[in-house]
Amino acid sequence: MGQATIISLIIFAATYVLMLAFQKARPYIVLASAAIFVLIGTTGWISGFSYSFVDAVSQIDWNVLMMIAGTMGLVYLFIESKMPQLISDVLISKVPDVRAAVIVLSLFAGIISAFVDNVATVIMIAPVAISFCKKLNISPVPAIICIAISSNLQGAATLVGDTTSILLGKAANLDFFDFFWDEGRLGMFFVVQLGAIAATLVIAWLFRKQNQKIDMHERTEVKDKVPTVLLLLAIATLIAASFIPYKSNAAEGQFYKPEITNGLICMFYFIVGLVYKVIKTKKFDIVKNALKEIDYYTIVLLAGLFIVIGGITEAGVIDWLGQTISKAGGSGGSVFLVYTIIVWASVLLSAFVDNIPYTATMLPVVAVIANTLSTSVGSVNPKLLYYGLLVGATLGGNLTPIGASANIAGIGILRKGGYEVKSGEFMKYGIPITLAAVVTGYLLVWAIWS
Image (cartoon, rainbow, N blue to C red; front, side):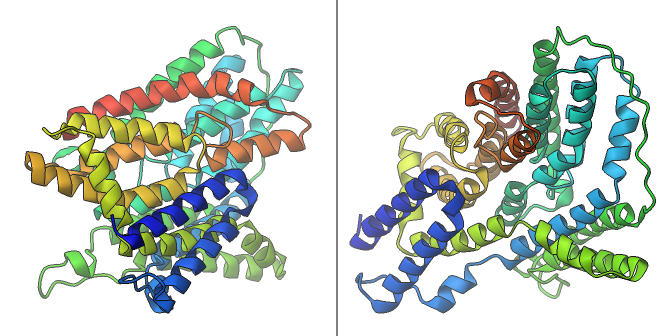
């Protein structure tokens, strides 16, 4: 291991330790780390390591950042229209008791989060659960925990369901329908659905004694359906655009799309929605409110992380990590053992480190692992390891309250309502539900892609 690799690995490890210790300051920590890599790479302090400011900026995936910003803005308009609340009200009016209500809302949260950001999904649905729990004079904490966990589970179901899926789609060159049917095999959508079924059975068992009757027939009034139409159009356009290849995958003479196509689509519909609302209300407050709802925290964190990952890649850290994990398979190169390590290490790590930076870091490592294993044991489909990473990182984030942004959002909503959530109470639900979903996904991905 060279000097550049050792020093970069130390900086990278320190970055993650600090992010874990000071979670609210993570974007600033990552930006400081990115600045250090650029400074070292520009001054020539480490022999053989060059990483200029231009190199750093080129590592930022603007398509991903624009897609996140545009989707979040569009989802704000969707929530503001009160359509999600109306759908939830209709569902609740059809169920007999609390257990059925929690199951229905959890499943509904999963369906929504397959196409909408997980945090936004929790914000949409949590108020409905709190409402009927207050009427029955019971704690809404268990219901909100299950809703948050379900939204996380389904985030990996489609290309637009979660930031981790967006990152994977870019790394593995997946279009929208590859999440349903990929290379003649079942895609992640069906893996996630079977995991969700296993998780739902666990939820039903955990709430087996919650048989209080529900009598809710109020219906939220929706006066504006345009945001819903725009959100559906955005999803449809993303699906259509997924069939057009990027330049790197286009045949000679074939039409290809710009690298920032998906980001432009999401931003376009968001801007159309803003213009529509301003014209309709003749007020500019909606613009300010919508811009406030964009998660700049995650965007800045990812931008800095892209630069840091570019730096450690240039220094050889990614190659070293990939080769080290590959050696865990022994001299014979056990693909199953390496796959198992990736899945369950991801489960454990993403329980304490947000799955977005973890996934962004591990995707290039997984590519190296797949290449190394292919050299030692023959052809290994990298999608086996990519999907294993997604199962572990996305589904595994539900073990603890800090493992996923949706969990943090759900706990925040409860805190505002005067309910404190202890880690032990969260894990009472999080651990069995997560294990049911992860074990199902772990076995299915191996069965399909090995």
